[in-house]
Amino acid sequence: EPEVTQTPSHQVTQMGQEVILRCVPISNHLYFYWYRQILGQKVEFLVSFYNNEISEKSEIFDDQFSVERPDGSNFTLKIRSTKLEDSAMYFCASSVLLAGRNTIYFGEGSWLTVV
Amino acid sequence: AQSVTQPDIHITVSEGASLELRCNYSYGATPYLFWYVQSPGQGLQLLLKYFSGDTLVQGIKGFEAEFKRSQSSFNLRKPSVHWSDAAEYFCAVGMNYGGSQGNLIFGKGTKLSVKP
Image 1 (cartoon, chains in turn cyan, yellow):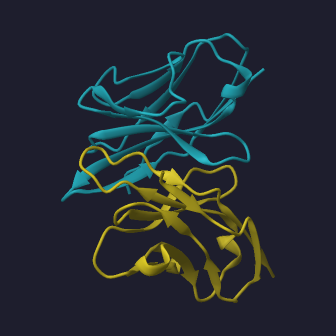
Image 2 (cartoon, chains in turn blue, red; image 1 turned 180 degrees about the vertical axis):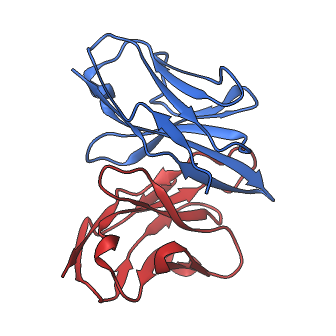
């Protein structure tokens, strides 16, 4: 069964450093997303991406965050200058809209620890 | 504003017993509804989904869920729980409008423990 793959599975970084989280969405999917889950809290939507541009973003997704689809297969989330509060599990997800119905499939997540 | 409530933070059931996990949503129109499961250290796996039609939906691993519009609920059920079902379960609502519909609103999750 096709799946969303994410790398790295775990990254530790120092506060103020830039981090790039990578994702390979399911191959025929056209919509891509990042979500995050701070330990013990809800899974929260960050951003959606379609047709090479951001289609929706949450309040969390401020200027420190950016997304990119650098080639035909990868989808990345960059955090420019990490803060302690960015420590979380980051989930990449993808979907294809069929007959107006959107089923979102998630990857296994990338644990980011900011120290 | 849209929201999802999972009233039970932690549930413990005996192996072989039946299970029902509660989910209530707040949304102005007919929502798209999902249940995901997260095993320790793992990602979010889709169990089942509801878009329209039959209000009783079947999912993977023997799970089912029933959409009840009058109660704004989408409870997850399983007739006989297995030890491998121990995990955290998340209910989510998706917006029913055009576009990406990717902004899922998640509940806080219900952690399921299974006693032998």
